[in-house]
Image 1 (tube, rainbow, N blue to C red):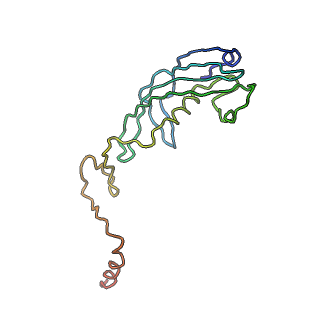
Image 2: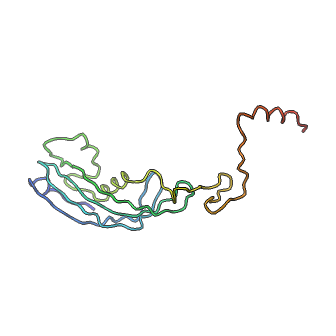
Image 3: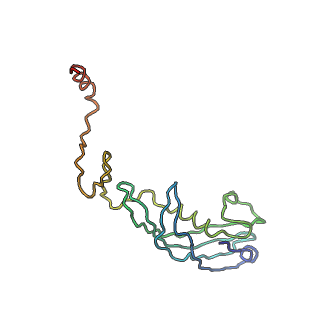
Length: 174
């Protein structure tokens, strides 16, 4: 969805508010696709900050289903996103270094979906856990250790004893 911001860019002191629906039901991040379970309308506020410049403020609340980083169970992760960013029109008085990075601006129009996707990316959690003491999965059989032990041998020999182990293995008859 594109929003025409010509009136905000060209009228000094112009303020405009809009509430829009973020349409996608899925969000892709680092090669994974996550389901968006709940989302509020995106509240936008556009303000003229100079000739060819506008300040975009707003907020969005959404809940995404993301797998736990240890046990891979689905976790509902709420994101409260508040944003504030200055954008420039193609004929702005001052050119910004960030103007080339504004891939969500197409001339005088704001691509709402691309803008919101950028904001979600910024607010994505670094680590998602189903609970703080999540035990993860067994590295041998893949059993969820939060549901109980799997019975796999988890003994890890001391690597400093590897030389002695080699001596004993060398003396065994085949």
